[in-house]
Image 1 (cartoon, rainbow, N blue to C red):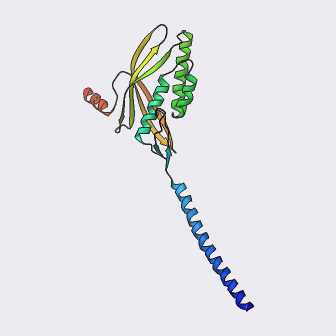
Image 2 (image 1 turned 90 degrees about the vertical axis):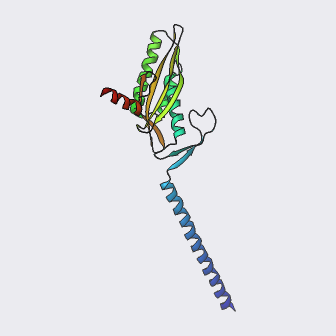
Length: 204
């Protein structure tokens, strides 16, 4: 009787050990799959982006990519921050644009902002600049973004405006959108692929 009971107990324990082994194998497989997913994951979701007007806009960031809506929003927000400078807000605007500009581009823009604010202070023109957005366009052939608008200079002496175009190249590095080229020129014409083609024809 005792031998039967003992054998039954050993069999039950062996069955329990077998179940534990199977459970551990399944658990190990699930953990392995999760680790692989994390290693090869290349998308994250950001629910708020600059230029969203305070509303929640779902934007998809890939490791090397970014949806076109988010690119436009980041570019417009950066252009506005660069263009709308005064002696009070310039340090905050510089902190903002640093998040989206490549280091060499930020150094150049930062120096220009410092010079602009210094000149305004020395000339006692403690006014401000504001940007009136006109048009945005992306040229897939050049892989460049174009923003057009008027920069208004407002102070006690004058209130003037001038049309400017911003020519921008952006890339994404490890989920981080970076503006790697930012050029400006006065006027209303985008120097896009069509414009360059026309210039080439005119020079022939």
